[in-house]
Length: 123
Image (cartoon, rainbow, N blue to C red; front, side, top):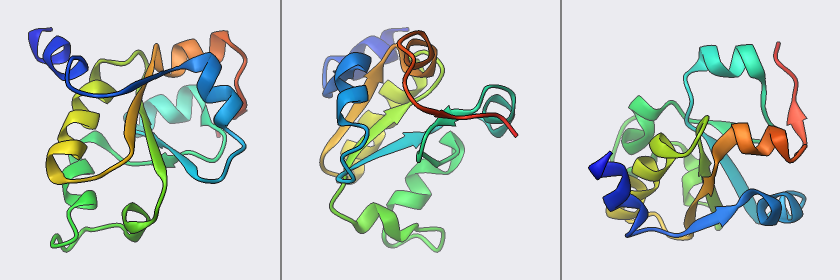
């Protein structure tokens, strides 16, 4: 928990109510770092990209053979997980790699569901 607390002190966050208002703006890209089984069980934020936490650094790094080009685009990246612990750590890692315009979603997907944000239903 000290790692999570340390990460949160170094990165930007966004409250779910603000993120819902920003959701339809196509300059924002929500990044779901949860395990695929979590997504299959509970769905995800509408339009979010799934980036497995274990692959995040490899997908961001332009020198990696696993690099995903959407990380080159000029988005505001909003990372989320179920609560916000993993996404805080992921956001810090993304910043350390050099990815700009990052935040993590306070309360994560669970809070998003509470606030009735738009979702893709589980498949």
